[in-house]
Length: 272
Figure 1 (cartoon, rainbow, N blue to C red):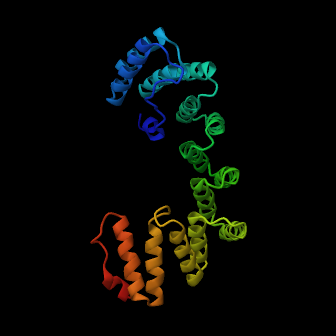
Figure 2: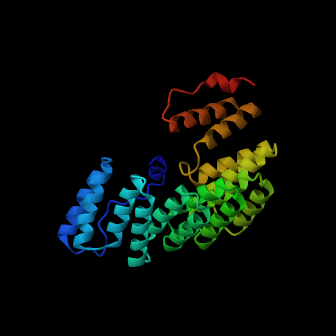
Figure 3: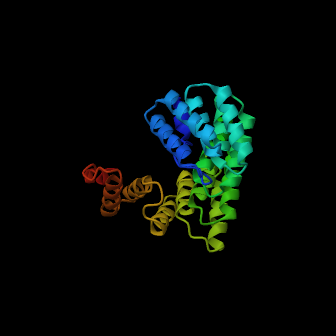
């Protein structure tokens, strides 16, 4: 059950094509039971909804209740029914893919997750589920390529840029990061995550000043959209350069973002 909740694909919303109020009432009752971990009662309520009005969302919900009870075969039947009834129902593919994952059928997991992504190409959550599977198999390059394609399709997808460069960093492909950030900048793309990873690449190479410059550009592009540790990195680099006041300023900002406004220690910035 823990793995099930990790994937969080349960969607307690009525189906878009629902028409029968009795079915919707039973579905709502099932959702209440499900949220309270009363999975057997949830299944019974979904049975009532389906007997009144078959719908993909109802099959998905009952499949989720059955999966939570570790009745994998029954859950698979419901997910198949949901997909057959509504082939464009992306959450059903995600659910079935998760079931395959629990059963060790990784190739089928990837197939279903990619189907869900094709149906919901703007949903970062779906990409994240696929990335988990690819990372588990050591296919970091495929993670980078998947996110790269998502970003190139729509350059407003900051999450895709983060996923792409994060995978490059995981491979320690710092040349790749610097090449791509340089290319994007030449194309007029200003993105906080690109600047953040450029800073990371430069820092890993021991180039403190270029790293600091890139980190500062990252927060200038989006002060709150990147990892808060960028402020800790800036503070550290200022500390190394002897800029005590600047170090204290960014260290204080870092702890503020962590929800610990009194956690910083200005004496740290004065030590070497």
